[in-house]
Image (cartoon, rainbow over all chains, first blue to last red; front, top):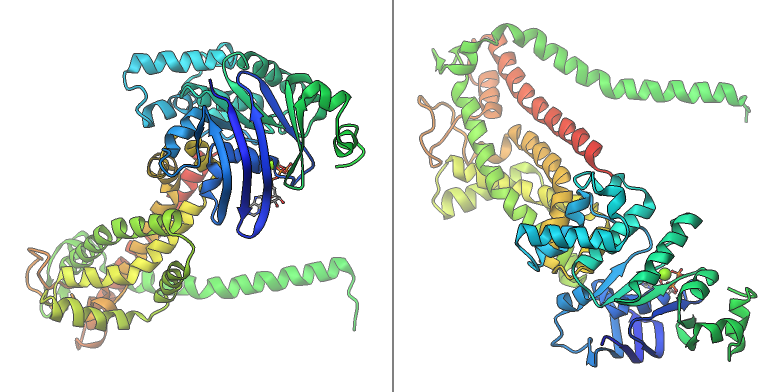
Length: 251
Length: 284
Ligand SMILES: Nc1ncnc2c1ncn2[C@@H]1O[C@H](COP(=O)(O)OP(=O)(O)OP(=O)(O)O)[C@@H](O)[C@H]1O
Ligand SMILES: [Mg+2]
């Protein structure tokens, strides 16, 4: 069980009110897409779910985000443990400038999740298999991760997250620096991962949201406009703004 | 106003730029030329490895070389860890409040204080107040105080140049802030830290004023035994033999200058090579 319940959540960058009273329930083992015009706060909301926004100076929040019933903004929450549970994949592939193997093993080693060499090897292999990268790179594990193609790098970033066994994976426009073929392949990967993880993805690509997500969040100027089943959002939205946006009339 | 045709004005400005570059380089080349021409005849194995003789008019400059070497070594051993830690704190932990801003401003301004002021400060604090006497350690600490702002500034630059995305990636794996610094930020900042350090070493090797009252001796008949000894040092020795000793053979003066110059240039070259090497390996 790893539902994400966002309740009356507000976020301020110093005095700029970036998220206004957002409330959504994100269900387990589904893909939830966040869409909306540029600057509406999609990334901000996504980054609130693993509290990576905490690292930005001047950010303050109001309201709750509960994961499995526990408010992650409570004072006694172990943020490092939270982030291990809630993995994140970024817009630009950002593997560390070390070997492919070390990239995947990094979280395991530094967090002391595993110390035995065989155990680490096994998890690295499994993670690389889970992102369908293993067959391509099994002979060059010691090569620099930066020698991979962008698509492979993004897969590696997902493998790196999977290795520390999260239950939720957040993806912020993970395909925006990839070509259409690579994008389709990453989408297929997400469909597979959905069976094991709760996935939240920010995307600018309407077709992508329609293709892969079950639920869709539409945001505009820091506010939640509509949250519904993806089919409903794309075929029969309740709000006029939503229908304008998904049909491409603004944004 | 006369309108030149673009081709001509391009040529003209190119020539002008070349001339200014020449103006900057020629004096340096001349200095090197004069020093090498007059000093090369003095350089020998014996000159580098023996004690001065006959009121420093003969023999070598070994104690001065060793003196400068030990002062600089002690100084960098003290400065580097403090500088790196301070830079980590300022860059990675300090909140951007008034106090932090004052500290940052102070560091920038400290780097501009004339070095003789540091010398007097060292005399007051290390030599007299802490009773270290005129010694290697007092000189080294004085140089450390002088070099600290520079080291902090270069290390902060090196830390800032590590892409933010690496930190976010590491933090989002549940790796703590300190571990992120330790395993991601520092390793990627090492090239910058290294080149900064070598350049600092080169800079303080040639400093005279800070060690004038705190470490340097006119003449010491033996090699340094401990960090509490007074020592001779290259820049100060150079000053003495060029102004205080009558009938000093000219080639020994220029030879000493050449040794000092070589020491500093070699270190700068090492810094440049290190930078090229690391830049090639860096791939983001
Ligand atoms: N670090 C920050 N400091 C101040 N304001 C910020 C910061 N980050 C984002 N903002 C502002 O918050 C708002 C929401 O930004 P956010 O990045 O969440 O939008 P987004 O929906 O992800 O946009 P995009 O589609 O372009 O990625 C924007 O108006 C942006 O200018
Ligand atoms: Mg965004």
